[in-house]
Image (tube, rainbow, N blue to C red):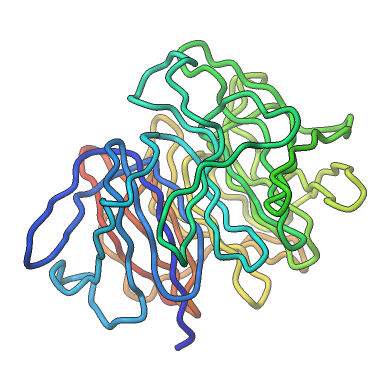
Length: 327
């Protein structure tokens, strides 16, 4: 199996430390970036660790899961941030936004961008070039075109529900920001998923919009053309998933977007849906050996070959660690 490391930047709860095995507690509202041999996690304190998926393990035996503690590296104290890979060799993690100390005060934000070097295994202080986006949380970044990362909208002030529909591009090679001039951007939203297509365009799925006082429709999805700086709406056929936010989405090598979980303030979801990006058609996913009563939100999903690793998340009052699905 080709090795892929995924770096999980987490933000909630505490960690359990033992000399025999490092086993993190369940958590929610973290973010994740994919690499080739390990997976990294950090939280509301500066605990930081990774999951080495090159080693065999089973999710039914916590002691067998190869979590590696890197707390000594330090790290930002945030919740509700988003993470993408970048740099010349795609070996850097860039973490955007998030709130420190679970405060609704904008002053609780730390630096808008944090960088972790996966080779040196250290955090690097960077200074962005030009204007920097307004601090925000509960949004999704998407990398494209060899070193560029797009961020869109998000929640600017949780206590008051302030959201705007700006789209920014971050160049991970020059550390420079640029603001999109597109005039037909979708409504402001948060809690959505952004997925980059093989051609570099970015599809935005789900989320909530205060402008609608409702969830974004799942049968009409905004697509951002990264080359022309133009938005357009994609009409999706087939049965439509229930509108939701705080779910996960991954793109498979054969052109399918897999979404899982989420919630709509009234219901927690444990369903799996498949979006064929060739025909732009939804279909209901079938899990051959489903985990009984598994419903999640605030989790992340990372693709490793034909396996989707679902990391952490919350269901009712229960916090999960990690599981995986074969796609």
